[in-house]
Image 1 (tube, rainbow, N blue to C red):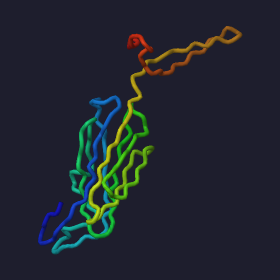
Image 2 (image 1 turned 60 degrees about the vertical axis):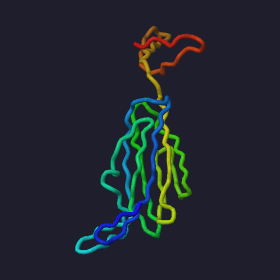
Image 3 (image 1 turned 120 degrees about the vertical axis):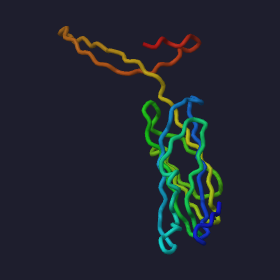
Image 4 (image 1 turned 135 degrees about the horizontal axis):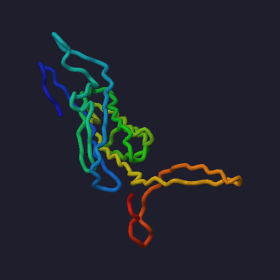
Length: 173
């Protein structure tokens, strides 16, 4: 994408990010932040072209399963890194599965849910999918321990609710 602003031709690189959930179709919203490595600004009287700068609408956003967003950054002939990070979300595994394509150098970190795409005018676009798995519903279980001296101690744990093999799903409390 090339746009002319105050006689400067700005070229945008991008990462098209698609959100998937397991189970598919879960309505949970996931929060993302994006940053660029702003290195060079030019233009008079005020800088209008900053390599590595993101569109303000792309700096923070949310996606639900099945949704996509194109995150744009101004690029030049030299490499600039676009970093996208997903925030941890309660009820979902802390580790995600990230896959990317597009012929661009991309580094992913499933544990921190981070994508770093190296973009320039020759290799300006990447396509990534980030998938999160639900930890599932949990129910509290109270455990009672009785010592040899008949003393009692209790503790509570949360256990996942899972269907029984070949039978109906357990009741939720």
